[in-house]
Length: 93
Image (cartoon, rainbow, N blue to C red):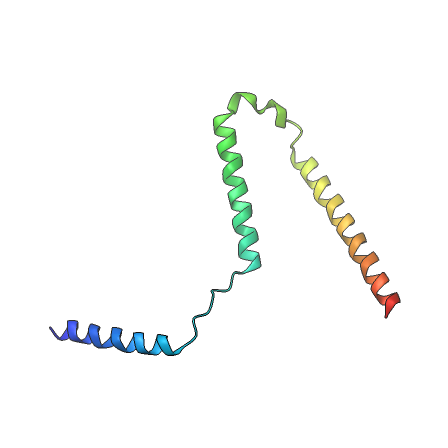
């Protein structure tokens, strides 16, 4: 019986304190969002591989070396874009 009354008192106090405070939206971390998208993509690729196991010869070009080359090329392109943007902003100011 004491536990029930303690629970009621705690919930009543909690309602009073939360009603006086502003309700804030939960902060969504950008890194967590990117990780979730990556994991979702991996799950879809695995499902695709399980469903279409006989038609996967179209994906023969996806190899670790090709993936590494694409990552390096994208990194160089992103670096050059950011460098050009930095130089143009430095010239303006």
